[in-house]
Length: 374
Image: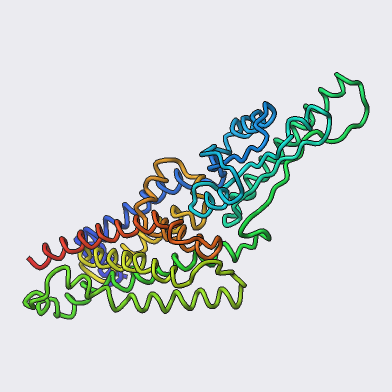
């Protein structure tokens, strides 16, 4: 028993001296609890919505206002045809569209059934459920109000339903979970493996005693960073190909857009994760610390990027924080291309943001190398 306690005391002393590991043991649980407890919210509200109002009547404007008042729909623009709706959804500008046909107000005033359409982006099932259920509930409540008003006014018995809202789901009409999850898994798996591959790179060089050879070599800092990244990019593309192939063959996930475009844009995402892994390796003193840092980074990516929880359900500060995560932008790219057939113009902004993150990570990693090698 005495020997056991002696070994345990030795480990505690060693842990206390390892300030980085001790800090992560204490700080990571607290940070993640506060961050995720505040940010995770499955109640999707404030969904960006476009309006296609072909009637422009008092009744059509009233319907839109009632939808906005619920707090679930934020009107971000008006469109003039279905092509503009498709474009807005492909670029991520809108997830919902309200379509009001001509003579909507006339039908309502004449006692006939006034029909409106709700178009929802099916690439996010949680958004579909929230948008559809809210609109149907509002439509049913409004129909009861109108029926009561007609009865008081005309004294009639049964009359046609005054208002119906007909939901339509685009891009994933059957709401299959695999169609939504598998494209996202491309980004999640690449994030996990790419960061881990490189997080231990410099630490491994130090532990093997080969770091000194790099110090005296004529290779520059940026050349060293890029040289460390390049071999793993090929590994990333192999993983990506396997995921897409299995997803297509087993889960029947469609690829509506250009696969070449997807592969081309993925290079920035893969390189950004590899650069981040190298950055962690310049901070960590041991391979264990590098692995701990990798896990610390991976969890926020999964929870805040929109992979598991709707982006619109998060509070504004969490949404701003998610913008620095490469996975947030890559998910929009991969889902846009595979499920919506997005072109480069549709996902250009997300790609530019990925490139900006990549440049910052390479610069930070190079600066850390200078400090390490200096």
